[in-house]
Image (cartoon, rainbow over all chains, first blue to last red; front, top):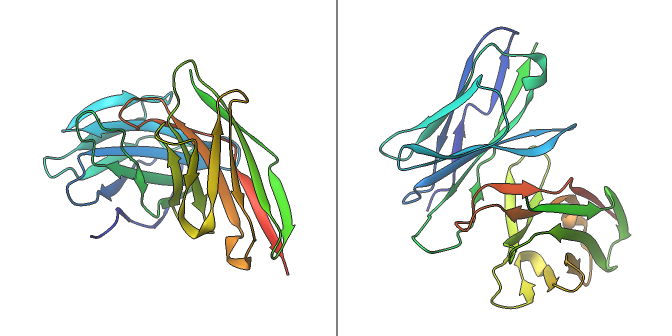
Length: 115
Length: 114
């Protein structure tokens, strides 16, 4: 079974631009979560989507948004980019079987550099 | 809110020596704990997870962790380090009963010396 895939793997943007990152979960997985990893703040939870609905949200400004499609693929968008948004953005998927405590499987990440 | 603390941002061991990476958690409910490993320029790979079925959890690559409620700890060990174990290791706790919404520790960079 193929793992979590993220595109693009690397991205360079300038301040003020917006960016969209894509994540395809493991086949059959319905939950997709996004995390930001920076040297200063470490790994931080952005949001989680399940069945096309945002189920959980971390403590990030409204410039960070996401969505999930009917095939469970997810995108996250960052508008009005700031230098501090430079980070590795990780996507994770889980099966989320009712009543189960599922494991999150991570993709390789998208490295975003904001100049 | 649940949290984890990893003691030691850098740990250095010799090849063949014991690896011990420390993680303490804070939780008011039975925690759902994980250890992940990250190699350079890669995502996170699950090493093992604690789900209350057993206090000693065995994972991949010879790693194991023991859940100690009295010490609120979930330390990661490996009897004999290999050069390929050099990586960054993260302890995490789930905020949700579904296992999602992970809160990570600060990470421990493991160096293995020949």
